[in-house]
Image (tube, rainbow, N blue to C red; front, side, top):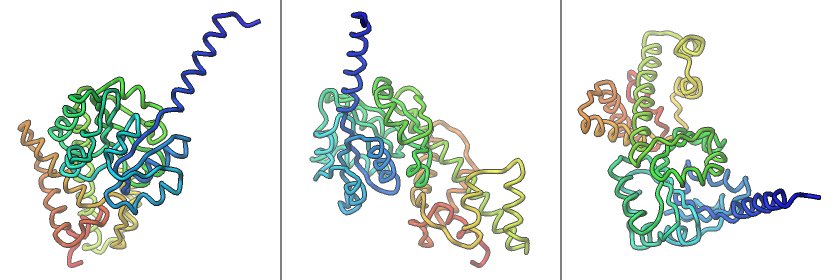
Length: 310
């Protein structure tokens, strides 16, 4: 016969599992990143409620089992935890504070997890408004682009409410390969800007290397081979390089968003009086590419701005 304490323990575990199954996730922003993240939540058997500014972009996730609603506020009302993946601070603030938005619908106990890449001030403003209404806030920008989002290989850079971070661990594990808790709200936003600043600077230097190899009549393929087999071997170079050598830039992370992140990182540098001459120069190359019509191309299209006579 089972002991009474064993029976109680088994019942407790069963209740905990049932409680986990009852969690409904919301997701606002079904774009290049959000689509893959939602599909992974659905594949894991979660109930997901979605909204996007362009409603037709929800078609794939609705076909996979998500429920589409009319406003971001409707997502919050239907969900226990609402994720957001939005393009920039302006859109993040609009979705949060519009009449039918996040803040209008948030209530005690509900959690808002913002995965957008924004500056610390934006994240702080949204977080303060959420908590003022009794909600809970976690900023959770991600490192990774389209393919990692689809493959559940993102890195979550979280800060804010530690209890929320702990509670959504299973969802983060479904969408990513690593999740870090960095402290108070703002730390996640700052970390993401530092990471993306390095990425943008690396991509610009790599683009100049490809361009110089081409201009000096060296094989770009041989250049890529040398990099891939030496100390500078880098998954980003390996993945992007062959297409860049052909002047092709299929979008995984839009250039306009990379340039936005460079701009925000440089503003953070100004705020803390940190010199960033390499990043500042890289930002100018991204601005040139953006002005030349490459805003919606992949951020590797910065290469087009530095290629000689191309």
